[in-house]
Length: 359
Image (cartoon, rainbow, N blue to C red; front, side, top):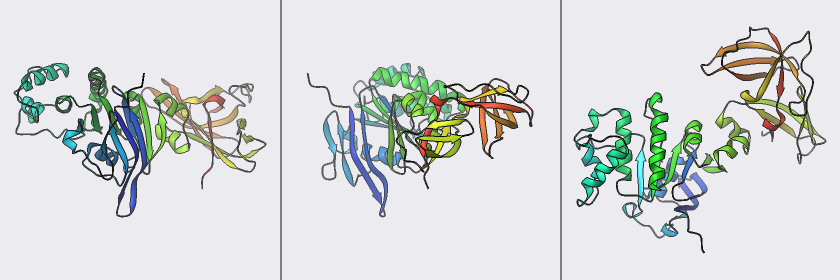
C-alpha cells in the first residue's frame, strides 16, 4: 500500500524583502496529529514562513502541499480561505463587539453552527460562556475562545504564532497542555512558532530550529537537545560552559583531561560545551580530589566565586585553578558553599559536545 502524503509539506521556501533573504530554503513535513515547533530567535523568519503557508504572503521560490495537493508555488495559488488552514495569533484577535458564541461561529455556515460552538466550548471547558463578550474574559479564557474559533471550521492544519506569550506564566503550562490534548484529539497537524525552548520541548513532536532564515537542525526534542548541531544550537536551549583547546592526534587537552575530537584535523581550535547540570561537584580532601574515571575524566580544582539559590536549584560559579575560566554548575535544591571554598569539578564525557571554533 502507498503511504498517505504528509498533511503539510513545504518544499524549499524562499522569501526576499528589499534584496534581503529572510526565509532561505525552508522545507518541512508535518503529519496529521503531529505538532511541529518552528523555534528560533526573533527576526529569524519564523512568522514569515507561517504567513506564506497561510497564503497571506507569497513566496519567491518553493512549493506548499496539503495532503499531497499543491496549494501554492510561484505561479499557482489557492486563496487562503480555501486552504483548510487555521490561524491563531498571540493577540487572540477576537472581535470585541461579538459574543463568545458569535466569535467562534464567525465564518461558519449557519446550519449546525450552534451545535459546533457548544461542542467546542465544552471541550475547552467554557460551557455557559456563549453570551459573554471578550472584555469580560480573563487572558486564559480569551486564549481558549481563540482556540475554539480556530478549530471551528475543522481545519486540516493549524498555524499558531506565539499563541501563549500573552498569558500569565502561572497559566501557561496548564493551558498549553489542555490545548495540546485537544489538538491531538482533533487530529490536526500543527505548526507552532515560538522563541521559547521550554515551550517547544513541552509541546512538540518535532522541533525545527531556525536561524537567520534557515532551518539548521530538525528532529525530536530529545535529539535536538542531546545532539546539537553546533555551539549556538546547544546554547539556545540552556546555559553552557565552554572550554577551549587545540586538537593534536584527535585529542584536545583541557584541565579535565583529554577529550576525543575524531575527524578534526590537527591544529584545529575547538570549543567543548557542557551544560551546568552536567558538571559534577566533589569536596576537597586535604588538597586532593576524586580519582579519574573513564566516564567523568580527570577532576579539576576550582574555587567558588559565588552561589545563588534559584528556587528549584542552586547555581554555583567556579574559577578553575588551571586558567581563568568561570564554570557554572547547577545542583538540585539548596547548595550554597561560601566564596573561596575549594572544590573539585568533573565533567561527564557523554554529555560534552566538541565543536570546531568559528571566527
